Length: 279
Length: 168
Image (cartoon, rainbow over all chains, first blue to last red):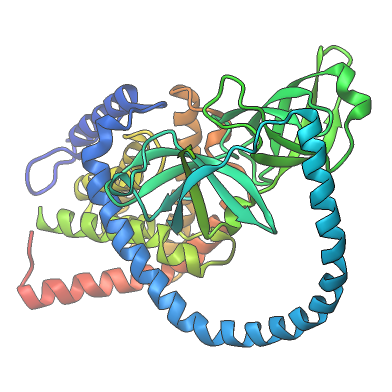
């Protein structure tokens, strides 16, 4: 005798139906699902997530005020000490700026490209710990569209964070650079050798730069900076990606593999900047 | 039907809280999967049918909240709901050990199911964080939280059914 519940429905039959529905959803929407197809669901759920995320931030801000006041006092003392040091450095900076401008002019560098940015606040992460995703508090209403490039400022430097993956009216989800489905055309800032950077998806958060010519080996050093190259890519050139942590050269391979430490640590990001059109 | 919808709504609400409030409160951003623990407790209490439907609906809400393809969490949570529901009428979902073991096994099932799905559907294996320190932390956190969450869920069920004389 098969098990039936008090409504006369066999759980196994419903299970089979639900599995089939789930599999069909997976087949038709994944793994590279289309944003438009799920826009209807996203708008509602992202709106709820935005509401809860915003409330959380306000509560956190309130409780954090006292702690921040104490921290600011310590920082103020420290800043006074550093001020004296920086006054000396300022003179050097003026000289370096002048020298930099002269060198740029001599080398015929184009003026540095700058972009309009939309500042956003991180309001949510992944609910199940399985995927790397970030939800921020602005969406189509603020001019954000799928595929836009996201940067963040951390430890005194602007770095690439990822790209906009799905967009709701007032919030959107970002696929961070550490995701292995993410590819960025890049180059070593000093030696100018090119390669392709991808996420490794592991807990270290490291990135992998492939297809760098073996000839580049001697000119690459630990902590060298890697930037976007802008070649055949949605990413504009010159955005910092990471620093060289390790260079791997295999005898059978025709190119180098470089492990990079990302400039932006995704787990510490609170604010980000979404790039709009060039100014 | 009402029970299924209530469990699904509460599970989905905790899905949102996991990605917002708990994400901020828990160091390192590794949050316990309270939505899953609620599902296991409710499925154990109400049986496989309600467990699997609630699991499906909770999973769909998590799919919308994450970058997972639609159906990914739905399938995994449906299986967890069904398996937990099979425990109805065997052991009582009370005490310390039964909830803790059930949630521990469910968490393992969640990660194993996700791994299998990623393989079958060609998701980039690195896109899903299976075997990591974060996964181990979540396993521990879920197991520890199983007892209090079970207690609250079962207490709420008793109070709801006692006051209303039972509802479907």
